[in-house]
Image (cartoon, rainbow, N blue to C red; front, side, top):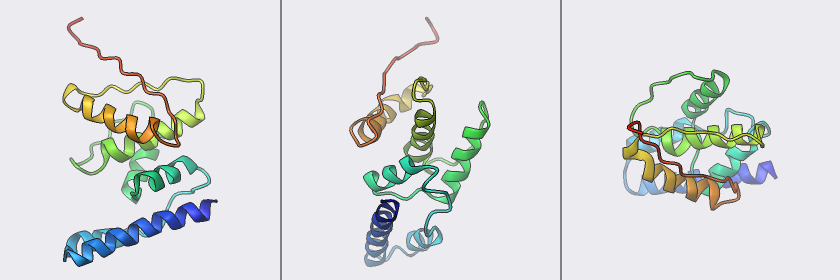
Length: 145
């Protein structure tokens, strides 16, 4: 099962690389070639593998490093460049892993207002309306209260 899912991820990667090559996007193609295969244990994080297949993406080494650091150091803060996968990769990875470990616990995310609706819609699409079937509750809060 794991091997088949990994092959699906590699197939998606090949399609991305072919598209980049056809569009002559050399820098993006080189960046895509840098990360080949998983440098994380798919048996330890099977939900990440399913997430990759469902979303047709690849979790890169930097995403794994940041997610593992944040999961093993509660309350830690990490600065990550804009557009590098904080909302669409790292947060779902953490949600999926911690949600599986603490099946009876509730995970709480605090997301700034400008990102809230986009993040909620994305989490709903990729975590709730998928094989992951995670429940998401939207509880807006204002500091003025």
